[in-house]
Length: 71
Image 1 (cartoon, rainbow, N blue to C red):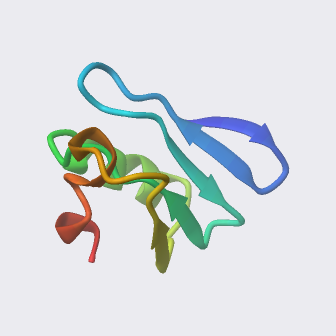
Image 2 (cartoon, helix red, strand yellow):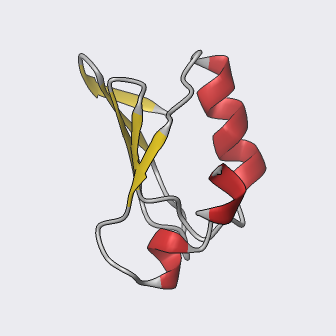
């Protein structure tokens, strides 16, 4: 997890995952495929981040596949 600037974090996606962004610890942009759910969840918990809103940029599987896991 990389802090880009105050309130904006990036979780780098490795193929086939997309990048995941978190804004102000509350909004997650895209969820990835869900294959890396455990690792992403661990990174969020380690940084005391628990987003409550998920926004998808578009409806490709690499951006939305993990949506159900992040409910």
